[in-house]
Image 1 (tube, rainbow, N blue to C red):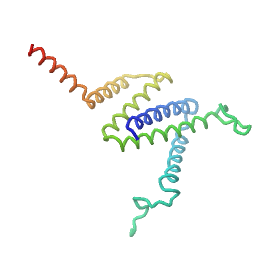
Image 2 (image 1 turned 60 degrees about the vertical axis):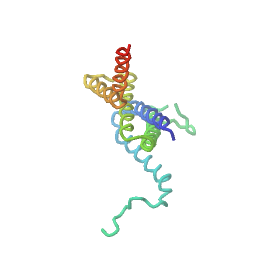
Image 3 (image 1 turned 180 degrees about the vertical axis):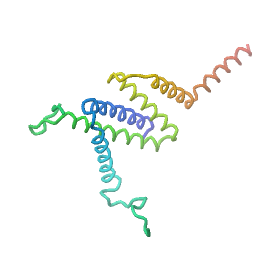
Length: 176
């Protein structure tokens, strides 16, 4: 898998996950436990099926130490499904895409690159939350924004490239 594909999975999966989480929390403020449970249950089931082959694959790490509300956009055989369950399903699926993207990214890139991508993804999720859901943008958000951009610029070595370009121009002028 390519690095760009993994980065796309992280951004698409995680950012859309935040949208569905915001939709859930806005309409059902006390839904945090069910969201967390559903995400863990889905990931555990997926791992049980695909990673352990229904428990037939021996784990690398042994399990024991040897000696020691409102109904909807959804007809299901003539029934309507509350919108919360639709949002929850989409939240779980997008969380899976997000996690899978991060796992792929960790196999393709250095850990610092993965951290940078995840941090930028969180920043984008914050911007979506502020713009789409009209959440407040406080002074602390500005501080965080500045730190994210400074860290990104330092990591991508933009300053080194700018300095080298400026020094190259100065050397060209002196040679003339």
